[in-house]
Length: 192
Length: 192
DNA sequence: GCATTGAATTAACAATTGTTAAGAAATCAC
DNA sequence: GTGATTTCTTAACAATTGTTAATTCAATGC
Image (cartoon, rainbow over all chains, first blue to last red; front, side, top):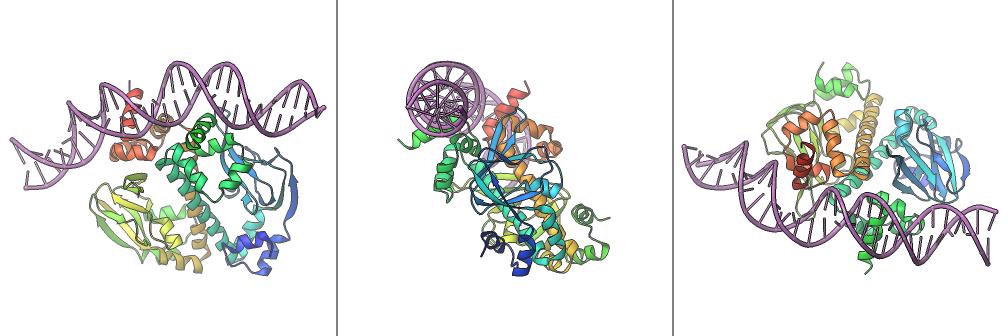
């Protein structure tokens, strides 16, 4: 089974015919390291499924600094989900950290499927719910844990290896809500 | 129009007949100050709409401390949304901060409406999307802003008056991710 | 009214983080 | 390979936060 189909089935019982309605609208793209899939300020309705490579998502703060908030690896979606559902300009930017391959489709395709197929409509709700649970969990961690505890939890997570090996530390520091210098000190404290 | 109907219509074009299918399943309840609407560890499927009063939502940390994460006032929903959608025991507790009046219905009623009415299914997706946008915004604030900036943003928010006048400061401190003592110092710094 | 409980403030000290700057290490381009 | 750029680490200092404890203030119960 196609890895995208496998992922979709984890959210809703999409059958083969329903799956093909989406798959026939997909195109494969390659993105070189450092290039952008989503850019802040644009209305972005493309959704990518990562076949190979990895990406970081970041905000550009009022001070002009980049604030990395998420990392994405193989067999995950990337998009400005909020731009898709609100129709407004994207607040986030998504950049390739490695040379990557994507399967790309448009949110409008998904919207049409929502209207016509209850299974796809269910998929839409489940995805939003899934993202909400993840974000809520992240928020509570930021409120409850200090930076060192947050780094320890990252070390204990299933994504540990991928993140530590493939993501530059300055981005990981953003993700933890601290400066790269502070992360360097925490690493020093722990490894001694 | 009923305030609950007004709220629902902001998410989906529910017609009068569809609205009454929910309304006839609602019951009014009064909760005294300090009592609980949702308790950690239970599978909670009730949803409340606040007619009068206010509530705080909190987590109980592994150390046994209460960590307030949200405050709710008139004409808002309260529930363990994640318990409803996952069917698992609630991680959160919701407590009345003032004597309050609620309109209560069950998530199972909503689930049945999701299946039978496209407008209600749409409502389900829009609610999840709305909550996601709010939580994401909160998460970015915690990553990007220091405690003083977070307090300043709270002072600039539309809920400022409600929160400052009706919520004890120790709970506001939790909400900002700091100790009540640190909040007291920040208030002192700003007001001088 | 009075005592008691809990909430908010202030103080003092330790620990952590942010900031600026410099040096070491790794990566990239040619 | 070599130079240039970027990333990561370390240091020193300032600022902020957490912690513990004492004090003041407000709310509550009897």
